[in-house]
Length: 137
Ligand code: ZN
Image 1 (cartoon, rainbow, N blue to C red):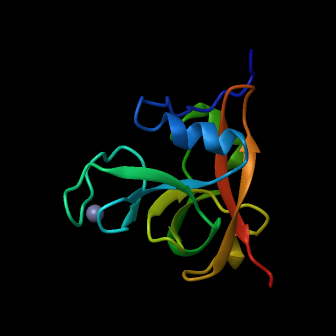
Image 2: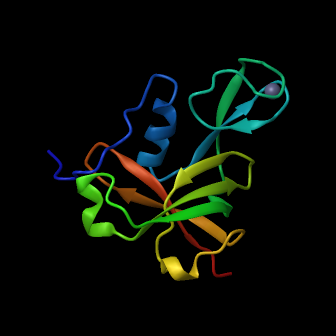
Image 3: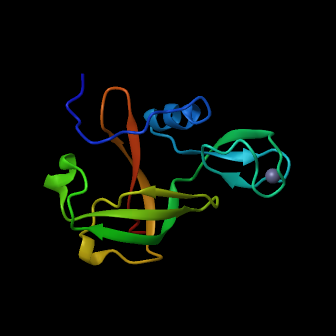
């Protein structure tokens, strides 16, 4: 039993391969077998060509910050100790955008378009979440 108190996603039959991959410390995206467009979980249908034929492929883990906010309000008691914390939209190299947090960087240094790479946060025995850190290449 984990003592992790923050709300956690509950994998669905569609998203389970994503969470299984993240647990293995691999980031994956859905790729349409018809047109090649990549997307993230919870969409069985390709937004470009409406095909339901897709495969899971490993993503590079690299991306950039599309936008972010720094939370100063306690919207859930479990986040009280983290305030102020960031919530960021990350554009993956493969195209999909996901919601995550940027770690390893003070909130004051966050910038739109900054290059980031995935890191894996094992929040419980069952679940790992992808977070992102600045890429210093
Ligand atoms: Zn498609």
